[in-house]
Image (cartoon, rainbow over all chains, first blue to last red; front, side, top):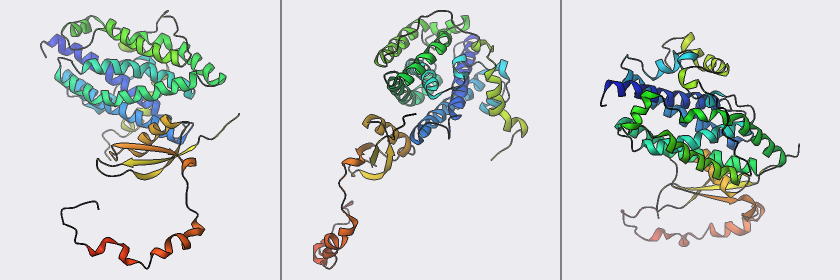
Amino acid sequence: MSTDLHREALFGFTLRLGDTSLVLGHRLSEWCGHAPELEEDIALTNVALDLVGHARMLLTYAGELEGKGRDEDRLAYRRDVFDYRNHLLAEQPNRDFGHTIVRQFLHDAWALELYERLCASTDATLAGIAAKAVKEVRYHVRHSGDWLVRLGDGTDASHAKVADALGRLWPYTGEMFERDEAEQALVAAGIVPDPAELKAAWAARVEAVLEEATLERPADGWMQKGGRRGEHSEHLGYLLAEMQFLPRAYPDATW
Amino acid sequence: MDRKDWPLFEIFIRPKNGLSHKHVGSLHAADARMALDNARDVYTRRGEGVSIWAVPAAAIAASDPSDKASLFEPADDKVYRHPTFYDIPADVKNI
């Protein structure tokens, strides 16, 4: 790490990525026991566990960068809504299976392009985490992308549901390519990828699957934002209440 | 709602190179690609395999259990068909 400024910016970047993985992983875990097919139930919870695993690595690293003695559990379980830095996309409720798949695919396509580039990061720890995560994410995007094609190019009902979800969720995709001034310095230092180039790669990947799924790419209109700064929808509070209940009620419990 | 069950697939996993695929169980999937994905999620979570075969269960021809006596029992009293009269070198595995 070259400067303290980089260190602080990298803390912010790592925390955002870790929070996004954790919140999305928790959302997917809500399907456990409820998915439309037994096999799909296991698939969704596998992805959920992968994402929580990524969050563990990222939050542990974020805690080290911060240097205030907070470990992964402290960061995950002892922060309130306004201290969370996840994308708003990740906290959107599951609604129906098609909606979950659209949310997942938009995220997975971004995560794959991001981790592929982070493998070449000049920060060795981040590159190591990315190298581990990218193999799992490559499967995630295959899973959610395949389902999007099946549903989009499926029956009238399934097409209508994913088309509706795509319209609802598209405004949440802008946040994935925001970089504040501190993060721009990380881009310049080759630590994190350039957002414009990342967006082009993401869009190409998404468009290819949407075309196969006979879905139209929504226009890039007004975009939701705020998650990266701690401004969240009401949904995140309920999610954290459930996720944090045990460590809040029984601090430092072990099992 | 018109709901049809997905067809059944039988899943075979090869644990490592050099060994043969072994039947591990069955699952439902809409088609072969989904069967492979589901098999990956259901049967290879703990590093069980390096290769998956998914076979439509309908494509498997099975012997009739009631034919057991005529098909298999004649072999029971023919011990000379077993290769137990040879010395197998200790280093040879998987025979």
